[in-house]
Length: 109
Image (cartoon, rainbow, N blue to C red):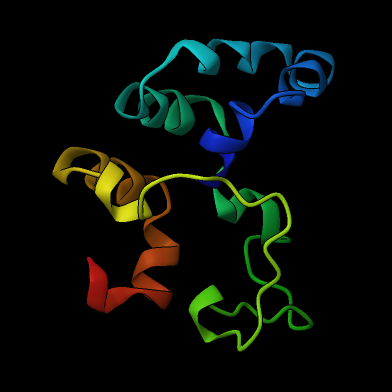
């Protein structure tokens, strides 16, 4: 969600074109199509944090909701995030990061 809106911010296009030119297509997608692109082209959370097939012992994963203070750097102006999702986009994201949802958000499946 944050990436979708960040990509649409003025100035983001220049950095995107320089660093990830294959992602420029996102600028022309609606949110549902963006989710399709995301699960086919982006890395799962698992790809970013697993080392040798597991979460390293020195890494603690916390939910953003559990933070008492969150700075709103680069805050996007949009509706509440859940208003963008439908049953199909939720299912796709769940499958994409199943291990994460099952481990940390099991009550929200």
